[in-house]
Amino acid sequence: MRLSSFFLMIGLAQAQIYNYVIDSSCDTNSYPKAQDAAKEAILMAKNAATRINDMNDQVTERLFQTVFKKSRAEEKGPLNVFTSIGNFLKTSLPSSASSSALRIFCDNDDRWVEKENVDGKKYLFDPHTGIAREVSRTPSCKKTDKAVAGVTYSTADPIRKSSITLCNTALKRSFVTVDAFKQTGSKSFATPDGFTIDNYNFISRTVLHELTHAWPNRLKDRAPAYRWENIISKDAANAKLNSDSHAYFGLISYLGGHKLSDNAADRQKGRLVQSTSLARRDGLPARCRDLKTRRGDKGCVEVLGN
Image (tube, rainbow, N blue to C red):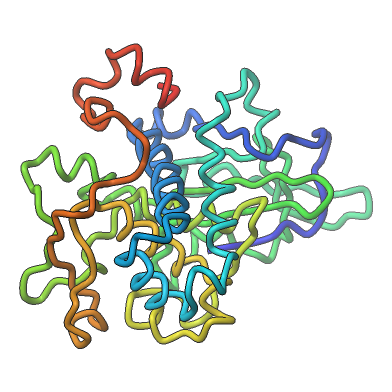
């Protein structure tokens, strides 16, 4: 979900585009794995860009045309989106959280406080990022009319800042990342009867969705914006601008060893089948994908920035 602030930053200088930080609320609220979700979301984007660039990868070509309704040669928008998100991996976390262009929270939007300007007009203010909102616009995690998994708040140009809140709806999910799911012994993502790609709603996919809303891409939710059946029903013009279209493409591309079913009816339902020819293309050594061992491996630390 994407939202914009109604005026610019208060007391904060322009930030670099590709710095990000995980807020301490993810630790104080007993959710330290948000770091893993963010890193995997960035790896999803990096992997998706690599696959799109490989013109010999016909499985990716079919997935691309299923989601975005054009060939990779015809449509470059998704490649630009995934490449920019993948670049977050290339920067170190800033020493000062206030200097980051992106900050990820796990506080269910508790940080917003009501203030009043010199004209007596009330507004909501985030003291951690300097982002402000109209007081009438309830922070999305606090809305009672629908369950919101995540929300992105952004300033306007030229000061490009964004914050992402992972709401309690998302934080209650059983599995944070694809890699964590594999650690349970569930090696196959092939969908049994009654299951589709919608069932693999990892928090890392939510983060990837929100990253497409943030600077520098600022994609929107093109209604109906969510779920596989709505994603693949979009025309090309709306698909390339819809955040969840990119999130689904990123997730399916990242699973490794799996693809959409060759059966047209099953493909429309989002059914996955195993495909041994599809190794993951995230550029990570195999040992660095194991959550239990990679933090103690210097080589993995250098790659992942743990």
